[in-house]
Length: 431
Length: 127
Ligand SMILES: Cc1cc2nc3c(=O)[nH]c(=O)nc-3n(C[C@H](O)[C@H](O)[C@H](O)COP(=O)(O)OP(=O)(O)OC[C@H]3O[C@@H](n4cnc5c(N)ncnc54)[C@H](O)[C@@H]3O)c2cc1C
Image (cartoon, rainbow over all chains, first blue to last red; front, side, top):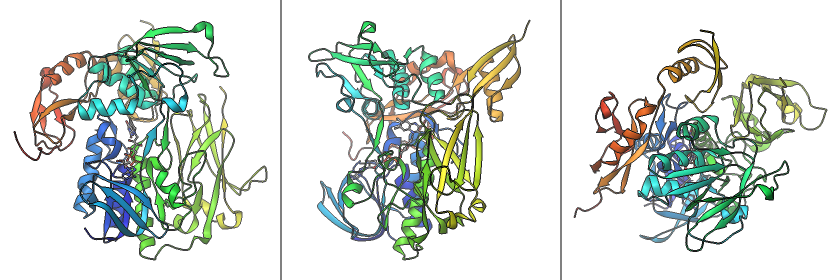
C-alpha cells in the first residue's frame, strides 16, 4: 500500500464512509479509510434493528443494510480500506501512525484528515454505582455486540439503567431472544431516547419503565444477584425509604455516550466542553487547518442520515483543502446557542461555503417542551443587543432526546459579514 | 357508539408524533397531531391490525461471522412476533450470503419473507 494519500479518513462508520465517498466524488484521487475493526460499517453492524435511512434512502433499513449500501458505494468509487488497524496518532503535519498485526507499525502521509471515530459508552465507573464488583454489569452497547454479532447471551434476567435508545432497543432484543427484562430505570423524570422506542421496544413487550429512579447498589459476589433501585427527588438524590431490591443476574447501562477524541485531542484540535467533540464549522472544519471531523465524534447524533450528511460535507472540505482550493478562513463566524438550548452544532460558520448549500443547525434542548417550542436565529452575537431576526420555526414540541434541526436558506445571510455571527434561541410555549 | 379519543405515538419514523385519534368502534374518524400522511395510516393500522418490523439474527455455518442479521420484507402482525422468533431461531444458513437473500420464504404463511440484512462472506477455509 502506498504511503501518500490525498485524504485519510479515520473510522469506517457511516460518517467515515460518507466522507471517503464524498472525497472521491469531489475529485480526491487517493482516499484511504482506516478502522481497527475487521469489517467496515462501525456501530451500524451491531444495530440489527430497523429504523435507518428514512431520509437518505426513503426506506426503513436495518443498520447493517444501511452500512452495506455505503460500503458498496465507497468500494465502487475507488475508496481504499485498511482494516484491523489502529490509528495511534496523527501529527500536525499530517503524518498518521498506525499499528496492525500484519505489518506492525505504518506511517502514512495525508493531504487532509477526517476524524470519524464515533463515540463510546459511559461505563459504571463514570456514574459511580456503589456495591460489589461481580460479573454481569455491562454497557448496553457491549451486550448489543455480543447478542447481534457474536451470537452470545450475556444473562437471563436483566435490569437496564438508562432510557437511552440503546437501552430500550436492547430491552426488546433480549426479550425476543428469550431473556426477561424486569425493568428499565431512568434517573430523569423524562425519557432520554426517542418516543417511538418507548412504544415499540418497551410498551409492546410490557417492559416497565420507572422514571425518576436509579440503581443505588449492585449486589452479588461472583455474579450479579440483584440491584437496589431507589426513587429520586427533584434534586436527583435517592430517597432511601423507597429502596427496593430487584433480583437479576445482569445490569445493563445505557447512560450516555461520549464522543471519542483521544486522537484529535492529541493532534491539538479544540474540543467543545458541551459536546465533548471538536468545535466545527458547517463544512466540518475543526480548529486546526486541514483537519475535519464528522459524526458521533463531533456530537452524539440520534439519526444516521444526519451523520452521513455531516460526513459528506467533511469529505468535500478535506478534498478542497488537500487540493489547495479551500478558501481562506478569514470569513468564519461564531454561532451561539443560548438559554434552554443545551448545545448546538456547528459552533462556527464559514461564510464562503454558504453560497452553495443551506445552513443546517442542530441542537438539543435542556428539558422537555411538550406544548411547543419556537426557535429563533438572529444576526449578531451576545446579550440583548442581538440584531435582525433571520429565521424562525415553530415545533409542536422539543425533547432533550430528540435533536432539533433548523435548515436556514442562505439568502437569509446577506448581512452576516457585518453582524459578526449568529445567535440561536428557543422560546417554550405554554398550553 | 359514541366517538372515543385515543392517544398514540406514531412509530413510522424517528420523529415520534404524538397522535390523538378520534374513533368510533374500530373506525378511525379523524387523526390529529400527525406531521405527515403516514401518521394517519399508522393510526388506522395500529387500531385495526397492529404490525411491526422485526429484526433478529440467524446462525451461520462456515461464515466469517457466527451470526447473520436478518429483517422482514414488510411489517408483521404483532401477535405473530413470538412465533416468528421461534421460526427464526431454528434456521442455520450457509455462507456466503448476499444482502436481500431470502432466508425464510412466506414465514408463518404471512406472505412476508425473512431476508438477510447484509452480505456475509464464507470463512477462509472449510472444515
Ligand atoms: C445502539 C444504537 C442505536 C441506534 N439506532 C438508530 C436508529 O434506529 N436510526 C438511526 O438513524 N440512527 C440510529 N443510531 C445512530 C447512528 O447509528 C449513529 O449515530 C451512527 O452510526 C454513528 O456513526 P459514526 O460513523 O459517527 O460512528 P461509528 O459507527 O461508531 O464509527 C466509528 C468507527 O471508528 C473506528 N475507530 C475509532 N477510533 C479508531 C482508531 N483510533 N483507529 C481506527 N479506527 C478507529 C471504530 O472502530 C468505528 O468503526 C443508533 C446508534 C446506536 C449506538
